[in-house]
Length: 486
Image (cartoon, rainbow, N blue to C red; front, side, top):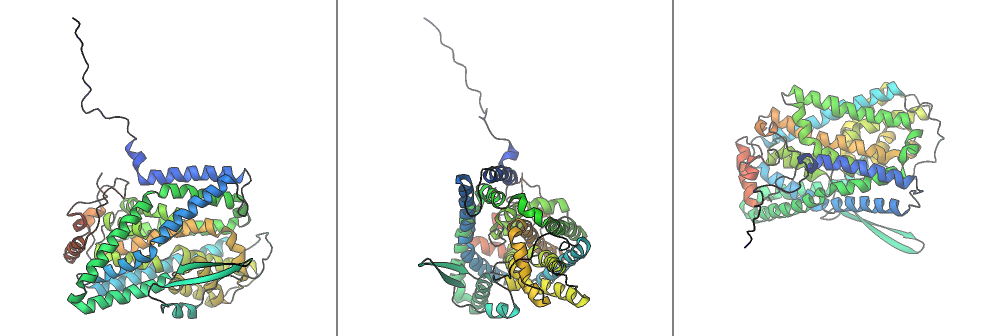
């Protein structure tokens, strides 16, 4: 009789697992950037072009555009429900009017600093001198003007939607678009009306809070696949534009990115430190949103993640963050509406041999500080540039010179926009004594999705109550510092 022995399995021994850092959202984005860069170069050097992409180029283009479309799909309901909810939450926050005023004031202050840096770089580096490129035909694209901004405030329909039809070879194609500024106006009006109605509006506000929770959940799923979208977006940008296009406007591109770097890595840290906060904690908290903004090139598309890190990582109370961050996503653009138009206007003047005087430099600063609202819901930086050139009386033909490299510049511009949209609420919350500094200084785990608990109407009420006591985001997860603990 033989005796069979068995070796018991080692209790508690885990199987193969990826290192903890490999599961970090930031690592995944960086890895996707590298993969996208490699695939983009491969597509470019195997003959892919913008008008005639090969199989790899077409695949990258489809992946990138599809991901941006997914982000944009939820923008309209997100902005509406978020703004209505934020206004309703402000009823439970002390000195809400002072918070709103301080937010707008710091939007203007940081924009002014950014535009001064842009003008200084334009004068110092002379990006429009000796470019070696020929004058283009007159720009015939969409232009920005102050009258369009004022008339654009009035919604044409409840959803702020518009449609345009083009006919090509006898085939009519209709494209539907939305105006973010009009949606913002509609949401503000509905939110204020709900507050005035009082108790009768409670069911509507509860429904709105529930809808916001559902929309945010869908957006978290979309943002979770950002690494895949990154591969397509970066790969397509490299395959279509590459370094050849940048080379002809190398000095201009350099000036823009130096300005963006100065604002992001010098101005913002100085403001953070001057308010007694840790620069390291600011960057570690906001970085996931900055990365997504860089690859998606959409401040509004990044809005859910920007608001999430502002609340859960930077410690800004939700009742205030849900007001300030959506407002910033449509009007706070240090990259698109300050640095870019300042450097570009000086570039155009230098290219056409036009000497700017002191008054025109003052106009650049004025338009950059006040004009970002005029570009909300449109094509962003290009419209802002035409608005600046029109105000200064400079040739709009200069816009055509810069369109070729606009996507390359837009990545950096949007990243700075989003960093500023999270910075200002943090500074204002600190100055008003409502910032949760324990949450701000808590350890990060690099994953903004570590807790995806859905927001309910009860959570919103509990959060608003906690906010009146100066609490941060703890009420969001019943006291748990979600998304910040390792």
